[in-house]
Length: 185
Image (cartoon, rainbow, N blue to C red; front, side):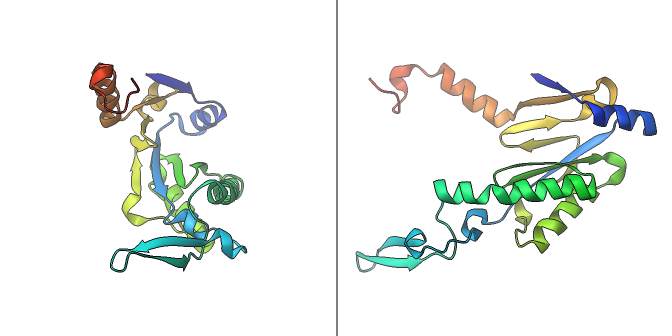
């Protein structure tokens, strides 16, 4: 179990409200890498085998193919939007590639998530509604659970592996090497 100390946010909240009661919410940008523009057609043409004719067919993809260039070009988008949300709206916001996390005092409800959703949407990078997680004290984010329940009493954030991730990792560790088909001999 890993704990992280809250710094100035904790001190400023305690001085004004008496306690630090935070919740986090998460979102995922819909089809993020496909929306990254590219002026080079040779970078956005995809070859696919038509199963009916067994012939290769070329398609133009109106955005970057998933891979190195798309990821590198895309990362500037959430970095900029995160900065805007922090500076203009005073939201404790974070982003990792196309995943966003919003932290807000519990008393504010889902205002951080709604504000982030509004800004991403008007800039053309809407969140995927099915991947949205509402504000909660413990929300999964990138295979981990970000638990803010200790923020109230001990000024700590608890970050741990999701139960499914923990079970999978233990299973892999407990499987003998010779029984794993992916292991090299």
